[in-house]
Length: 85
Image (cartoon, rainbow, N blue to C red; front, side):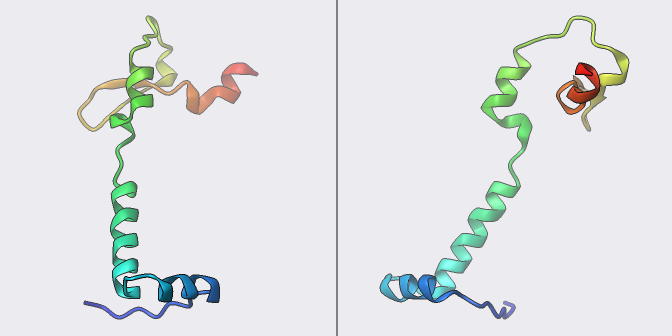
């Protein structure tokens, strides 16, 4: 284990002291949840699934990208400004 020094605002410190948990438990839980969210793969989200149900039949080559498995996707959304203007 590593030691970390953290400055906690008084209002949060009061909430911690009024809870049934230690600062250590709260911080460890918060870090675990943070890294779970950070590891989220956008290709597994509902939005990605819905967007994946739409198909562009003849995508322009400059807007095609591929993932690490070689599957090809379009990235029109990332280039929306140059597409619209």
